[in-house]
Image (cartoon, rainbow over all chains, first blue to last red; front, side):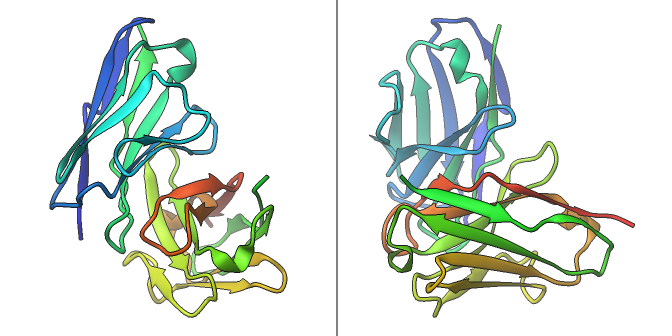
Length: 107
Length: 121
């Protein structure tokens, strides 16, 4: 099975900061990578599809990049409503594996 | 608007059974594979099981294979998860979700509200 590893496990940043989250796949998954946001107590929300395609309604401060095994999710200017746990997911293999998540807080 | 309304769940003893339901609306149900994802308290997301649009193909995580059974009734736009021989480590919030597009090599773009399953004596 393909394993997904996210780093860091948590981070704290100030409003307006640029924040970068990393996701690594244990083998090449091309661009079969999605990012989800889960705010505290809420349902997961699909943010990015195919490594870099923003879903409708997602603010443009979010961006995704990468291909193969290494991927990043960047928030260009952190806002209070971005406090959440972010998960990457591989959808190339049958296991549809998620990373363990990165928790983002406001400093 | 896509809506996924879940029902079922609750408290069950170890070894017991439970059936979850997910009623869909706002899209052509038969055209989309569907899935179940769970989240143990304070933990991350874990994919559990998926089913193709016509229900002919199913997939299971190793942790539930042989104990859980996924199915769907396309005449009622509803998906089910039959959970048997439940264990304490099955305790989680269970989400149903819809695939982004026709087929299964896609992420999950719409989610149900979640339902808590607690396995405890």
